[in-house]
Image (cartoon, rainbow, N blue to C red):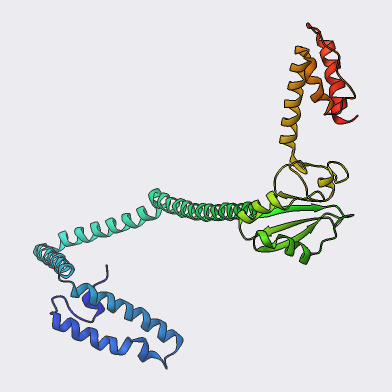
Length: 328
């Protein structure tokens, strides 16, 4: 530790008044504002000295630190004084022996410091600690980058999902409609504010319309479909779309019906229920129910079936029934 009194040009035991006065005098000389015209070397030297006198002044102005330092210095001075008195009482031979012993101890400490493996171990330990700190810093930076990338990916996914909830897929028959962006905007404006319209495919009869709110997209998908125009939510599965050439005269005129736009799940459920009903009718052999079957496309009444039926007979009848239902 440097002697704070010497840094301020004072001797041990200086008073608080002496410390303040010495610090003010040195500050006027070494302050950076006083070194404007000095050279770069002089400025650097003055900056180092100014920092040291600041540290010495702060140390001595702290009564606790100054008291501990003064006590240690007094102990050191008294110890040196007693040592000097003992040496003064020695004869020349004892003084020579002590001087040689001191020289040997000094030389041994110097050699021990040079050959001490612990010093090398300490250096290696310092290097290992520095490398570990660098690796930790790199790992923290890598983790931060990963966290940022994950957050960005989740934000992008949320944006895509939110945009999908606010969008509908539109497809129309080219023989019936020829829509432009303005036409589609006018068509879907009653359902909500339209933010963007993107045409899709190469045929020019499909587009994606994005609304401001998901509620507008839900309403448009539920109410905007017609016999020649299909509107569905983005991301939903495919749908069964019946041509306007088939169906009732109302459907052909464009008024539409509940079966103009039917999802695949509803289509499968309806035909599964129809199949079960036909199975029960065939097994029961009820002649009175054949009128309902004729309404589904059967040319006449079904023959009365007598149980029990084999699996082969049942499969053949089921295939024949679906052939009539599907119009094959």
